[in-house]
Length: 260
Image (cartoon, rainbow, N blue to C red; front, side):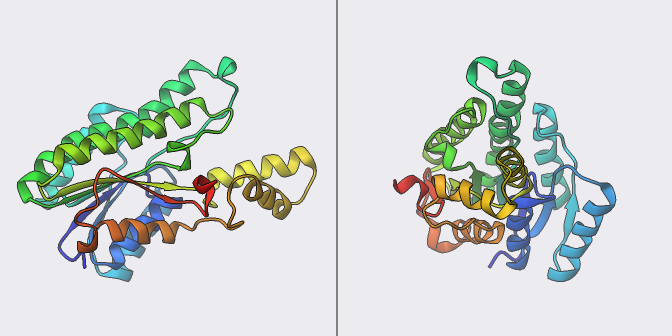
């Protein structure tokens, strides 16, 4: 379905981003991976996807906290591939603290990576997509782009901002062949969530399994985690002809969290 298309997925060396990247590669898209990690491990991921799916895969370590690095990534990849069809803004970081104790440096870092990076990437990508008369921008927000939880002021603000940015870009690109949507996952068992599970287990002196069940029971009625491959499937759907008229919207993949 995506043969001949070029996709950039930020924050794609692990977790949700990697799940999305693999799904797009399976559908034939050439890939640009981006994110942090051990150089050897990243190369193994890159070459593995390339070999398994017969697509071109490159890695670019652009720092998503820096405006020029984000815009430079987009420009370099357009120059290298001659096109850009899919941009998935997935890079994100998290920090939790009550608002009165929230460090200003953490607030700035979370907004830079979780929100501003998406803005800079979109602004740099849209002219090329409009020129091609086809483009898919998918922002990975969170259930916290729609509802709030305590101690997550910066994350919730950034993710709500991402949902708002999506609406504006959806309106501005309407009718151009370019769409812009947000995917809002609930609990996904990534390394970020694993840390929260471990913290709860240690704090309450319960098992990892009990801590995981506790996290799910509080918010996610399905009592099951969302998987990175399911989110990859959601992104793939948004890149399909069936989604040509879906733009400026937020799709929840959250086991019923926001239905409550």
